[in-house]
Length: 613
Ligand SMILES: Cc1cc2nc3c(=O)[nH]c(=O)nc-3n(C[C@H](O)[C@H](O)[C@H](O)COP(=O)(O)OP(=O)(O)OC[C@H]3O[C@@H](n4cnc5c(N)ncnc54)[C@H](O)[C@@H]3O)c2cc1C
Image (cartoon, rainbow, N blue to C red; front, side):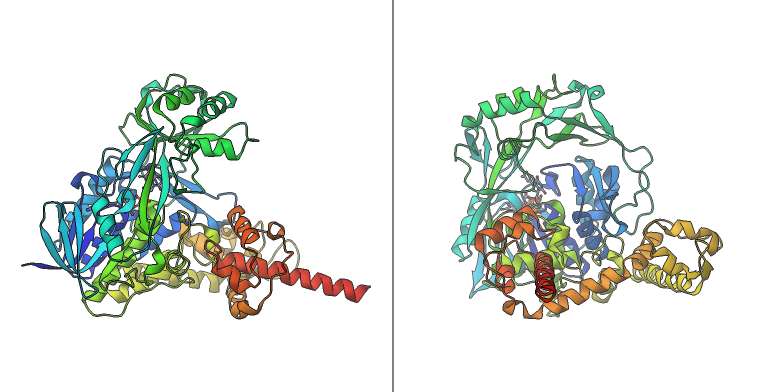
């Protein structure tokens, strides 16, 4: 009887990284998944990255993972988001070829000799004395393992909704894992259901793009992976159109056929990716909603109309789509649908993503209540590494909140749990300026090298980058010039000024200013030096948060920079101390810092008034 070191159930974005990282640590890995053809299938939009999600992608890459490499190999267009904001928060997003992605993902896994992949449905979990023993498939074959990682995504006890019709399925056309869900419940795990949804896919040949605005790709964006140098030459554009009053009328008229508004769908949905019907009902003052027509691949005739996710009946989908400029004759190739799926409460996991209930049983990805490929990949990396380390009886690998966005994600999940689908946001991190895309390799590759999951050449390249940045900063401090016809300043002081960019200093540096990410990192380190230091200091000041009182009359909507979600929750729960506020699910340490600053400034203002009167 063969015994595997790590058994990974599911080969979505979490399963891919979990098996890859475990195999990199030299242990034997068995991947069991429902279909070999849908390894890393992009269930929803054909895009990877975005604000803070791009940082997760780069962090997984810096650790030696796959999501960045796969995305780069099949990217059809890159864009830089947050361009109007400071360079520290620039973010990368790429449209990818949805048909190539699974092929590339599979070939990466197949390149590892110690990974075996098998098409099988896991129905049972074998446990003895609260210790994992293995799994049993739907064809009654038992596979034994020292550790098991469940990465079953949206497939646990899942139900799809199109209008008032509903049927079992993990994705349209795929099975739901009902037996596995029952097993998880039977083992004593607390479970719940969330809801998500997707839009109809349209036939490109039936769209009039001349009525839409073209959104061209950005050619100056670096690829996702730190290993790659360039992006494709001729990239594909997206196109922008809008809904209008007619669209909204069609939808409002048919709400009695919506599973969301008739109470058929009971589970909580993704707050930040609402369905079109949700947007129209919740924001009646808005007379239009933006839609991005995204390419699904280099040669695909399908396009993805991002922004019109729906679970309305098929005929209503046709009707409302035909009211949209450019889509008057659009034909649907796949209907949009809603999905309710099971998950476990992630507070039942350690920061390694091993469960507290069963030794050796790990959970990663959407099964932990997250949404998104990037969030799943990040968890897969941590679960894969730690399952292998458990087998090797080595110290666990945990990333702290100040080290990585991955650390923020896992800390939030395991300490606060989820009461709605969890998506990564920059605002969830208290060290926003430190946890950037551009320094993910400097922050994490040395740790991965110590673990033995990236090789010496990769580590040497990162070390060189880091040394170059330091050298440039030293140089900027050492060169003093007369600037603005005033007195002498160092180039470092000059670069700190708001409108000065590194490239403006070219003439003082023998015309040699590093380009791309290197130049940007030097600039960020100089410009944000003070802010970064303040970030660290603020958090250290908050050790006594249980004693810091929050006045009952405080209207949280007055506190600057709090998201609508945070304000709603705080106004509802009315915490009496900052410590109590932090315990509320969804309340980020960054939000606590904002409230603390607001209360302090109010207190100071009050003191000043008393003093002045
Ligand atoms: C309809 C829909 C809409 C979505 N909309 C959005 C969105 O708007 N925004 C967003 O960020 N994300 C969205 N997502 C979520 C996104 O697709 C997931 O977050 C991401 O794919 C999760 O990755 P994962 O690896 O956890 O799971 P998945 O990608 O779901 O992969 C799960 C894997 O587990 C396998 N599996 C399941 N059960 C078993 C079993 N019993 N035995 C063996 N293998 C099994 C499956 O075959 C699959 O390979 C949507 C998903 C769906 C289905």
